[in-house]
Image (cartoon, rainbow, N blue to C red; front, side, top):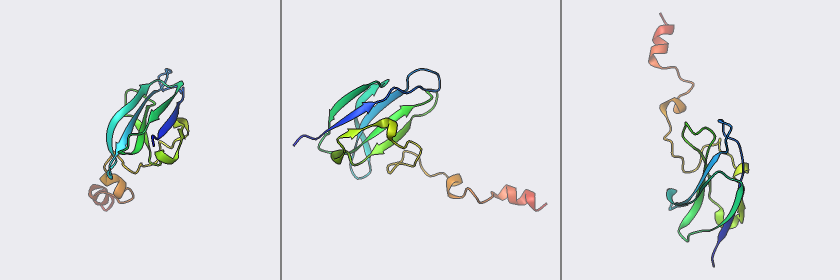
Length: 122
């Protein structure tokens, strides 16, 4: 059986006043490795995409500001989701297959660093 997913690519403005750039790619394997891409464009269209048998999900990227890195959201239940609307995805939460390593500042955001402690005790 061939599984397809429909994606409704929205027309949203970027921070420069133009149309936001969107990019879609497949995720594969238990680690969420990024595989082939299937969409790159400015939105305003709908596409149907055949889900590769090895795909475990898909990644949607968007560029609100083209001078910075893209934001992304992973959709892992793609086989049970006949339609994905990127405008409704949460790009602000940490994703299951995050591309970012947890930084020391995130692990100990409330803990002062050694220099701050020294300065405070003088």
